[in-house]
Length: 161
Image (cartoon, rainbow, N blue to C red):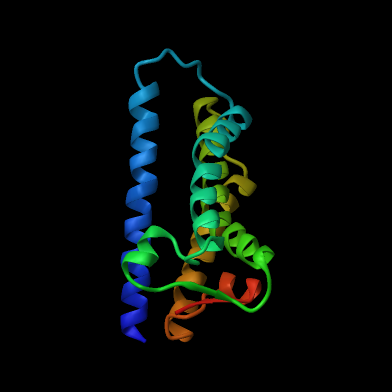
């Protein structure tokens, strides 16, 4: 149980090093450019297109590929199993990345209201807290399943072994 949880954690760390390297390249490429201040919707779309979708595609395409594993999972010799079809892998990763995107949405709107000197609406705070609750649930469900299935794995009918 603990070994699989540790392997999944290390695999995730490796995968986020890859995603972080990509993000660093983006930052290094565009940091010296004069970029206009974006509103929350434009900022959200920019982040979605430049970072979230590429990160999602990295995980989704490697997990649906021949090895059924991201590079991190391959190094740790674990892989994704599914009893259904490739759509379950898409659903799994959509649910896995959902807290990330909700948090980004909340941050964009938080800065918007803060910079305007306006009171931050409740729904923005909800967007900041909900992802943390979801990730906590994902983490707890990993322990209850002995490392094999998070909530998003259960919903997508997948598991990691």
